[in-house]
Length: 432
Image 1: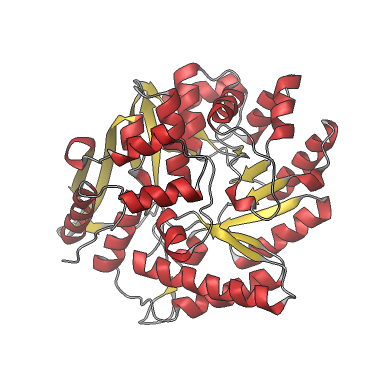
Image 2: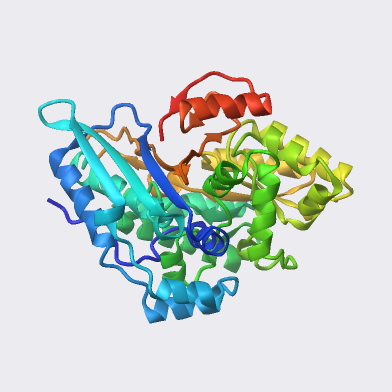
């Protein structure tokens, strides 16, 4: 049985750390649960795979932030304050207490898995990314090993070449659904090679802005990229109420991360990119445009992240809204992160240029889990997994994206929230 063992608590996405600091400052006693959803319809796990997953999760309890890692965070991420770094110095995951994995046989040899994570929000917020990475790595080591990492550096290099030659500003966002850590490392090296050649050419205008993976950012001297995930707004709405919940989330974020002056040479370090689709982008705009204070937040923040729905409609509406509130769209940025591929990045870049707004691209699975089967050359599909905040202090937490038929959380709570906001759409519910 393969041993799946992450080597560092930094092997996570930056936004988990930025959110952990914000949670520690604002909600230090909040109790939460998270649940796993396996969206891939045909994904079944063998008992050996489940044991590998369990072993990987148990191993997380042995990891600590090292003095060298904390010094690097202090120097590289000045937005992390000393009280938070002192908290990390003592930080420890306790999976035996905080994580419950349930295996349910479906056939004689395979079954499904359920995972629930429970504890103080500040203590368990870091589980999501490593557990998803562990599940994917175990699955592709045990259940579906018809693939190879050979050629992945070259594949990533070719993608990077095309993107950078066409002016794409790229952040690598692939930690959660990567095929394996080794593959992730190799793929990032290919992107870095393409980036170096793009810079040396003097002609290619695209750049690798960095990676969301903090460990690999440290290893390679890259900028760690990331801002906020849906769980921040989900948790605040469940705790404080849905009225103006997007605005409340941004206001609390500003108390931790005051919007800095934008520096064009380091766009990856800006923490004021607002994620709009926790309860649909329609509701986000309603929250922020309801009064002058909300409009000021839009003026201060660097830009927006588009993670679901109709990209063209999103760009058109964002540009029109910025103009209506007296902001030149050319000074703002949209970060696209919804199931991006190379062709989709190029199309969205053209769309943004057409409308006169800057564009950045967070590419995940298409980089770190784009494989073919060794046996026949057909696509080896990535596992589609999510781990979402499910409750906070006993209140259900839900997400309603711009694909209104795809909702996450408790069914009754979703129905209530949809009625509250006047949202239409089907009732496909993911119970996680």
